[in-house]
Image (cartoon, rainbow, N blue to C red):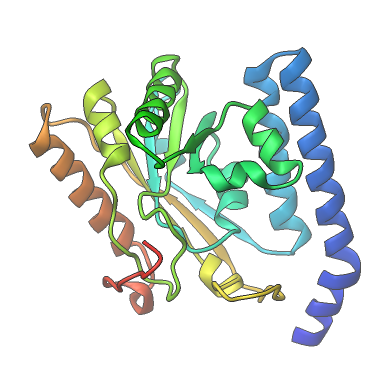
Length: 252
């Protein structure tokens, strides 16, 4: 069965993945340049995320969409299991949002340009002015009523376990007094663990759990600490037992 799945990936899924990725990037770049950036900056990628999961025959289970209010902006924070996290979130979160992503992703052929055209936020830590510019862009997105999606670990896991959370997303939520929504991503590490080189996927069910929003309890350090702690514990508790518990990530 595993051999048949690999043959399928190589000769059927891979061409479809490359085609859908190229079309998504072109639609996003052209649409955001000449038309409605709010529409073209989200919907092509939303469809792409679903296609990427379905083409690979990966079943997806979503919990907790009922926890979100229609006209509310949120700061979504999720654990980072692997590259397929992006497709699961884009395809199945069901909300308009912008990513906070590493600035190195801007250099990816076509994909980087699509991210730039659609207004994703590149995190630049090269100096105080660059960091300030990153946070200014994030504030602008949130004040405009769009939500923000962040991987607070800042790096993919090597083990399936969670690393430490960085404060940035929680500071933004505190400053703008927005609720933080923990999101648990489960199954991606089993599908494609972090390894060197190009690897085949392993079939496994994917699960996206959208937890109840954590409202501000005030303003300042106590609120930030509360949101970080609650988010971390909530995300971890929804993971399978084998991936619960902190494991140091040397890439952080």
